[in-house]
Amino acid sequence: MGDGRGASLVQINVRHGMDDAAGELYGNGEALPDGTRVATRQSPGGKGGSGVVTWTADTLRAGPDGFRVVISAFNTGDQNEAATRETPALTMDQLREIALSKERDALR
Image 1 (cartoon, rainbow, N blue to C red):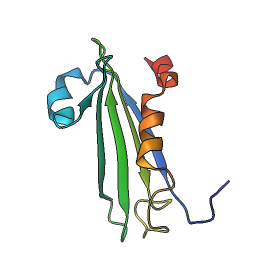
Image 2 (cartoon, rainbow, N blue to C red):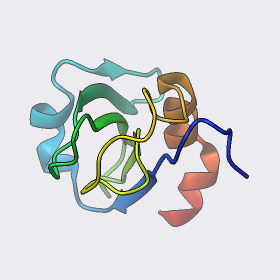
Image 3 (cartoon, one colour):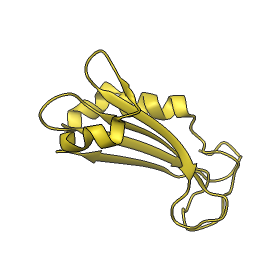
């Protein structure tokens, strides 16, 4: 079901073994009380679509497995095509909530 404002792509990436990149990826981010690192970014799209923007919530869970969850949303349904809406369908707060959800821990 769409919101009637144009297509919006959402990507979820899950990776293990990312603890060695914590300083580089989360240096200007936030550390939560449980040790989870969080960084958010808003940037131009990287695939060449005209006017495309990317909003990202990037998290790294504390612990030896380096469990990283990255949620990105775009203001288009195809990063190689022009933007179809002004902003992504999900807000930065929604992206952060999805990335930090305990449901992701089942993928550890």
